[in-house]
Structures are given as structure tokens and as C-alpha cells.
Amino acid sequence: MEIGVVQDASMWAMVADASMVVKFVMGLLLLVSLVSWWHIFVKMYTLIRAKARAHAFEEAFWNGAEMNKLAQRIAADHAAGGQMDRIFEAGFREYTKLKNQPGAEPADIAGSARRAMLAAYQREVDALESNLTWLATVGSVSPYVGLFGTVWGIMSVFRSLGNIGQATLANVAPGISETLIATAMGLFAAIPATVAYNHFARDIDQLAIRFESFMDEFVNILQRQAYKR
Image (tube, rainbow, N blue to C red; front, side, top):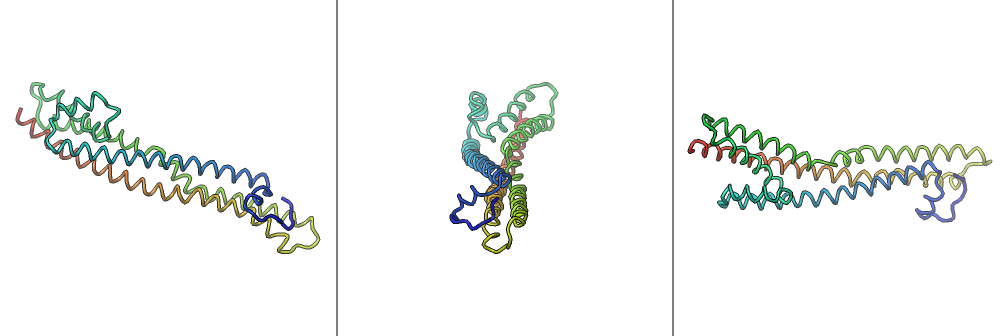
């Protein structure tokens, strides 16, 4: 980094004049930010679709849809169903398998169906939570990466002061301005990732509570049916 008065004070000019280490840090942060935004848009779409499919399933289920037909439809197109569809299908499949076995107790049948749904529930929640760790990591680490670039750049500025006779603000300010862009880019990467992580984590928690409530109600229905067989 050359100490001197910078004629072009635009951001692009300051980035171009930064040292190689600072440029590498800024390039890394730009890449991380782009990947984070890709994850944000994908997760946003996934959660919107999950909520819509959960709502559609609940409407069909609680409006009196026949469980056998509902389970057959979900099994026929497993990938197209929502998370709640697959949780229901796992529990109903287990219930159907055990209900006609001689000597099977209603409580045992309902318990087996609940365990099957819990396994499906865990898979679905894990899938919804995928890539949240990336956003959390970007939100917590990016400011420090940007700060590293700034500190390195400022060190380069002060080392360069030895090559000039008299240091003035005009000599030092441009170089420090260049390095501060790294901190700004670290915040630019971190803030959206942190906001998105908190928003998505809340939405996933709400969906998980919704799934758990359905499982509890469905287990009660299965247990009542098991007593009637």
C-alpha cells in the first residue's frame, strides 16, 4: 500500500489500492455474503412452502378426509408431500401394520405409531434446519474476519510511514480508509446472516410445535380407534 493523497476517493478505487491481504479478505467476505444470500433465499422458499403444505394437510385431515385414502395419496407421491404429510404417513403406516396383530394392546399400538412419527419428525426438522449453521457461523465470524483485514491494513499503513519524512493526516487517512472497507464488508456479510438465522430459527420452532401438536392429537385418535377394533 502506497501512502499518499488519493485522487479518486471512490470505493472501487480504495479497494484497488488496498494491499493483497486486505483484497483477499474483502474477496472472501464478498463470496461468503453471496453464498449466505443464496442460502437465505432457498431457506425462505422452503419455509414458505412448508407452512403452506402444513396448512393444506391440516385442512384436509380435520375436514374429515378418510385416513386410508390420505395415506395412500401421500405414499404414492412421497416427495411432493409436506413435512406433516410424511409424519402422518409414518404413524398411520405403523398403526395399520400393528392393529390386526393378535394380542396387540391399544396403548402399545399407539406408542409404536408415536415412535414412528417421532422418527419422521426428527428427520423433517433436521432437513428444515439444514444450512442454519452456515448462517450462524457467518453472522458470528464475518465481523472478525473483516476486522483482521482492517488491522492488517492499518499495520501496513504505519509500516509505510517510515518511508516518508513527515506523516500528515493526508498521508495516513487514505490508507486507513481503504482498510476500513474490510470491516464494513464483514458487517455487510454478518448482519443479513444473523437476522435471517434468527427469523428462520423462530419459524422452524413454530413449525416444530405445530408438528408436535398434530402428533399428540393424532396419537389420541389412533388409540381410540385401536380400542374399537
